[in-house]
Length: 220
Image 1 (spheres, helix red, strand yellow):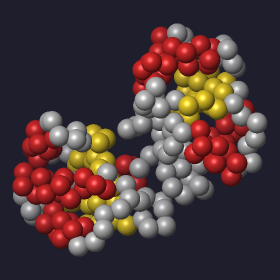
Image 2 (cartoon, one colour; image 1 turned 60 degrees about the horizontal axis):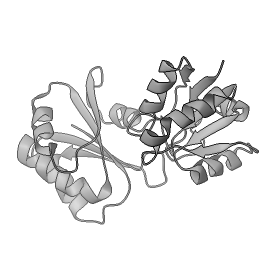
Image 3 (cartoon, one colour; image 1 turned 135 degrees about the vertical axis):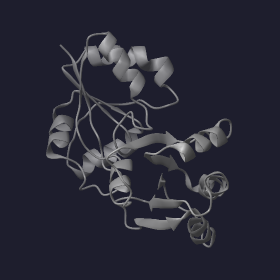
């Protein structure tokens, strides 16, 4: 019977991968990758050779999920990876897992890297209860969602891209108030990793005074 492993991969620092994850990748007959080039670089770094890799990403997952399941059913062990972090968390993966379970393919998710957990823990905000959203909508529904966040008692965590960070901080300041505490984690585990802690007004001043680059996790 085929088995599908969900394998988290490093979000930046290549040392952030478990021995178990490496063993699964070594044993896998098929590896589904968000970007085969990125995955092959990771495999090459750890001297894992001769692996059959297929592209599985947001642009083909709906049309090709049935084909992928058939491919998985033809092997003993398959692995799903994204470019960084845990597949399914703001990355492709959910549709494949759901369909695999429907087709009675055994699914097992390994523990491992995901950006929001270290960002939340090192923010200094309460993390016994929190709400994780992923990426905000580009336009429609964004303001409504931020208003909902403003009323929550739990710590709220979400992702944001560099070209939208300032507009999001401006809208958050408008809705939540400029004195609302926020932590903004940038480029986690990478050479330019940085976490800003302060108010929304201070965050706007800080990030508005320099080019905005990298990937961000916001905690309020």
